[in-house]
Image (cartoon, rainbow, N blue to C red; front, side, top):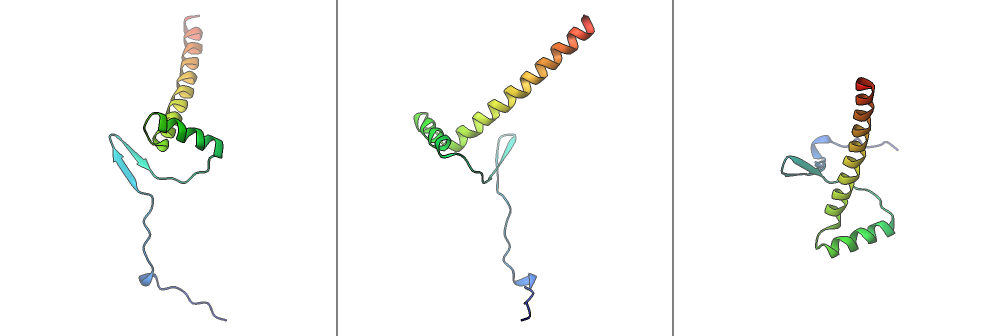
Length: 86
């Protein structure tokens, strides 16, 4: 049985992820998997604050990442200062 090669001109075009431009940072739609208990807690927290759980998740991730980076930079700066100034 011979396979048919699809005609590229007849194929349907599929667009990539949509970017939402809000302020200086563009948002990208992704698909991810979360534990059920985590998702349940996020939704409950978002409901309490009258927001969306995706927005809350973004804020929590940003806080965690910047805290980790900030701690790392602070630690490196202290080491550098102690090395330079004794």
